[in-house]
Picture 1 (tube, rainbow, N blue to C red):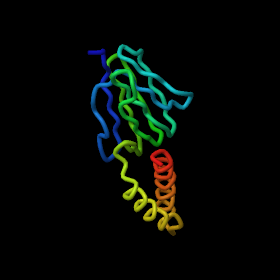
Picture 2: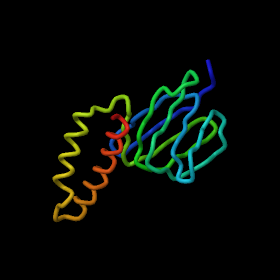
Picture 3: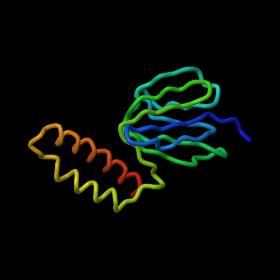
Picture 4: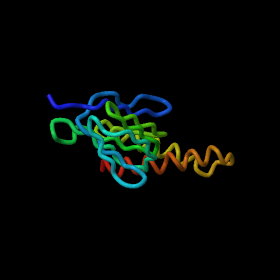
Length: 132
């Protein structure tokens, strides 16, 4: 078996994934970062994009994140993101329903609600674009 690093993707509401991976490629703010076992210590801000998780020398899973922070060290990769969605588990119908709900809030009188709705709309549209 290939050497692995422990990957965790965490949002405020859930642990999206917690499992070993041979390699993880993340959307760093300054470009893609590939993390392998025994990687040197790095902390990086992240952009919106795909986290590619490799096992058996191929992408086994993709997760769309909405920016965040990553901590990489010799044994693990931890990603803290405000929003994240597993691409292969994304339910198009549910996402479209959420899209409609947030669209109804984007012009809300309370600016906090409107701002939250706009951020969620943008992320859901990005996920929908990726899943087709």
